[in-house]
Image (cartoon, rainbow, N blue to C red; front, top):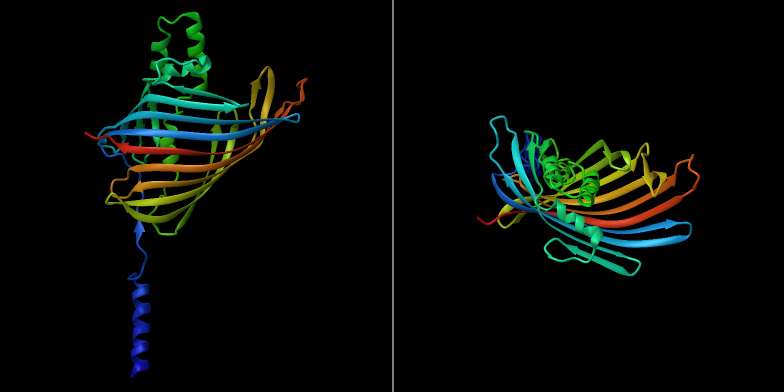
Length: 315
């Protein structure tokens, strides 16, 4: 009788399992920006060592950018506009025993090379997100530069033009796409892995290959909101190096490798991505082109971390 009962239990267990009664819960992880006002902070810390001709030059850099973000209501087609305004920049550079500090909230600064960053304050951009969450349109940066150039003197115009060249249109908005790329296209269960591979083009570096392995690590309640913790391990490798001019010598980045370990926090009910924390290592070799008179080779090693925090503004 006991054996018969056991057989019946096993049979029922197999039956229930095959019909999905014991199937693991799956979560739909979609990015969304509920209508409202937010603050966004991005922070980058890099410790780099440059080695050339037996000389080693270590440096440590830290950059913090603060933004006000306004998310408008979604359009009937599912697209959405985000307003992004840069409100503060903080920076520190340590090299050869010297530390340079800069903060746009300070009225006076002794570091002339960094003062030009003040020109970026107040820059407003309007971002359009597709129904799938990709940034498909960016407006406002060109108008900011043009406004600064109006009435500027020769020296100021040169500074503005140089800053414009080094600031791509998607310099700040790419944070949104980078977070979107981590998310799965289908519902996933705890511990489930999904992989992505893409090609990208990075300024000064040229084309790179990006491979990522992502996993839903855990689901926890944060301030009463069910929140997904996603871990993403990304490998980036350079392809065909792009030629750039440094100090009058044409150079190429070769053998660039970047390994990144990222944890992303996403509110499951709202779709709001509240945090992105990455640790990374970087290795690369910069060499002069074969037809250059100077034969130069620079070996670059570094490690660092990046953080992004997204918070609702108190009304």
